[in-house]
Length: 477
Image (cartoon, rainbow, N blue to C red; front, side):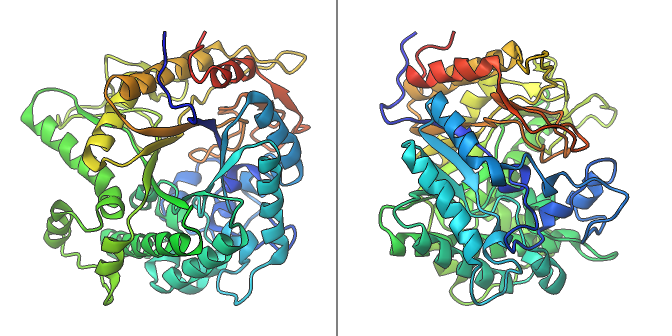
């Protein structure tokens, strides 16, 4: 099988600060919204903003406090990534490590130095950092005092963060993402944007107002990044996955169209520079008129992103039959069960062709370079007495998705910059807060309750992915 990825195609893996770093209270780091999202039955209510949890209590376990302690183990982890041959490592900055409260005048030097050390460690191995400015991170002080992204003042706080990091890391970081899965503000508003709701509030109005604030902030970030360094490339990032109608019933087809539009709304603004008509009409019908200031529309129009990135775990299927009760899980989203697909241990559809479909839809819509920055299989890996995992199921999943990626590039003409799997190393699941839901090529001795040595051990897939990268995607077996 002859592959046709570019010679400089960026192979690697992706993590998020709140899911791997730990060290939540070290070196003057402040508390963040993602720190207080517990495991267990209350997690969904907390991350969706329905249950207020602004601090730790004794009844819950909070996995982000320690993660997999990458804060103290990043050198070992990056060395392992380099051994696999990574060309790129996608990671994020914990906002509250740079500005512990979020509204200070001066940043925390210890936090700035920590990330500088990481970037230099990557460069030592010729690994390009791909940095998400905020991967669901919001300092809790900003949540408590300002209501997080529902408040326009957040734009200024975010702008200050961008000014600091773009200047500090000039020459160390070239690729940036403004917000992780920006569309999650509509589905997991506390985890995604630090937003909680009071009884009787117009939830949808608040979400779309906060979305406007984030979109303006993203445009400002793009402006600053290009001013600081003309070599900087700025991308947006959304949770993707094409929506299929369950049947040829026009009602199913129309419902799928509406859900696709909802998914593309943010990227339409970030890539095309304006609110799409369908979104304006939707908000008008819902009585939503986001408050805007003079200059907002011009900012959105002038400072669009250089490339588009997304996460892809599965497609979705939608049906309008009121009696339908056969549902499937997914990355935040639930959907009708697709009878033509197999499913993971967590009930997620496995749909490699869906990745090719998604790549084509996104590229046709925007005609900008694409970057797949999350794709992987969460599974209950069982390590033997030596810590080795025979994860052929993960290899099979990734192989088929890479094949689909290849077809999108070589047959369909999609311009693809790179591919970072989620995740190269086991870490805390964003959706469930579990360690048991493992994604990595590297096994981490840690359980759902925080027990374990944190020892890192290579799985079978480690050597497989190393071979894939060395062959630029040509050797998949």
